[in-house]
Image 1 (cartoon, helix red, strand yellow):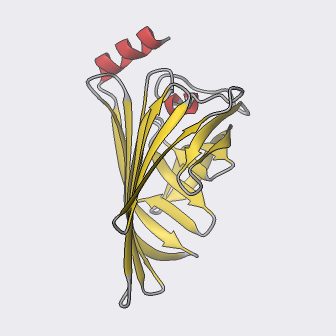
Image 2 (image 1 turned 30 degrees about the vertical axis):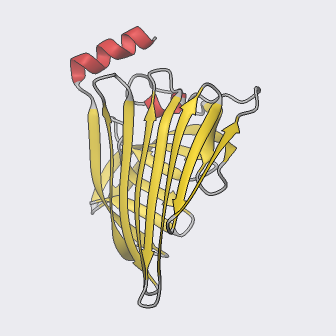
Length: 209
């Protein structure tokens, strides 16, 4: 499988990106860029840049995650900066994965902390769904269960991914076919390259421009 994927990546130079509008409670609130590419080492690198302004607070988020060809996590990071007229704060979290452990470094408003969080032996850590529509296509209704490190709690969290099939959606006035993937974190509608057309997470919706 890994050899076939490496050959496919080398042949196609796979990558994808989308400029998106961010809506909060139905109103435009900012912009985002979501992208992925394959590195020279044939790992998959995801990048998200988001900036929104809500209720007088501006929030900027820069997030990255990198996966090996079998879906094993290699590293992840997130930088958040929030600012209002009266206050500001920043936080940077970097995670490096070694075996079944996550080595976490966090810097919040200048204070640095570090810790290691091992994963339960029963957990599946490979994010095979990261390669859906890139090197494989799930069957409609297919469910994949795994775990990832949650940036909010800095603990391992179970993730359930389900492919709900192809749906017709309207993006920027155009009717498009999209792959609907639902997780216990958010819903996403993807194009044939696995790039988001729409992402919905509670009060936030990101839509391709």
